[in-house]
Image 1 (cartoon, rainbow, N blue to C red):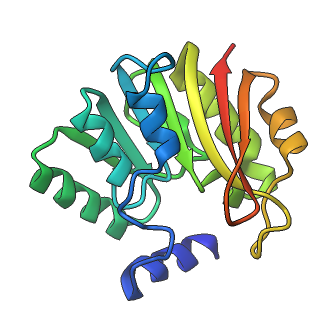
Image 2 (image 1 turned 30 degrees about the vertical axis):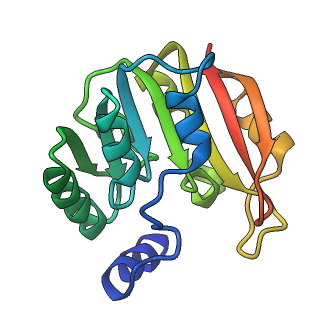
Length: 188
């Protein structure tokens, strides 16, 4: 049902979450000293039409995007070509990353609004797949809605518990506007 919802959203309209704007939290991590991440390999889970993959590629990253909506991936490929960047995009389920045809390790992973929509019974598969692909010490930046958001989400303590086995929490910042949070994790 989720797949149908997202597929229809990309086919019938421009989804409200697909803003074509790279969030300042990502820009700060990539461009601002002293925490600036040196370019390496990056993975965007739930990449949509590729805005952040293209941003990362523009900043020297070997960037890969994953989304389960074919139309979003086709648009991402066109946008990357038009932007003149080399990036890879895969139509795949983020809870089945073991089937993704990419070689680990990645230095950085990003998820802006995907994980909180993953069904509870598939979250462990997502986290284990991400842990397999991200190198020890690699950074994972995740934006997720909280339970009090209109469509629901995940509580901060639950996020920290879910990721705690494979990741150390570096920072949690509460989002502005919608009840949400930005999580920065480091792979153990």
